[in-house]
Image 1 (cartoon, rainbow, N blue to C red):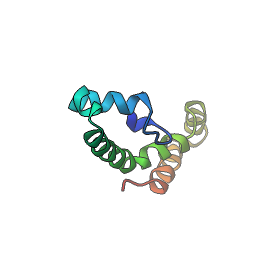
Image 2 (cartoon, rainbow, N blue to C red):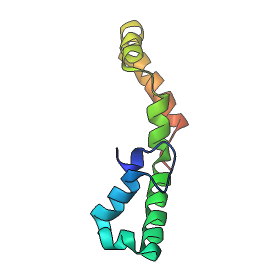
Image 3 (cartoon, rainbow, N blue to C red):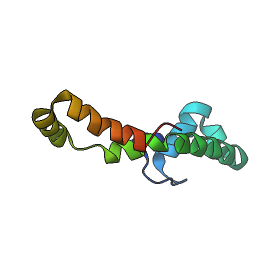
Image 4 (cartoon, rainbow, N blue to C red):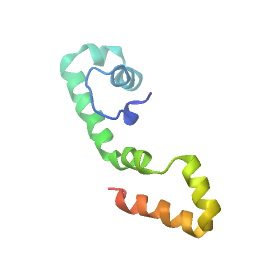
Amino acid sequence: MKFLELKTWKDEHHSVWKEIVSRFGQSDYDDETKRLKHMATLKKEWEAVKYKRDRAEAYPSTADQLDDLYHNGIDGWKKTIKAVKDKYAKG
């Protein structure tokens, strides 16, 4: 799991450690000042894509989307998807 996909932010989550180490190296993670700075940067990035997490939860299941397509056609399906995209617009 990537840190951007975390549903709730947790400083101690292994994906946060993994992201810091892969981007900046283990020595930056071991240095508390640098680690806190990098965590703040990662949290800011995570918060910037909140709309993606919200959309993912709000979209109907694949089965419901297929049912929508069958009963309402592509235009009906597009309205369903557009409603979610409008509700959780990009920042």
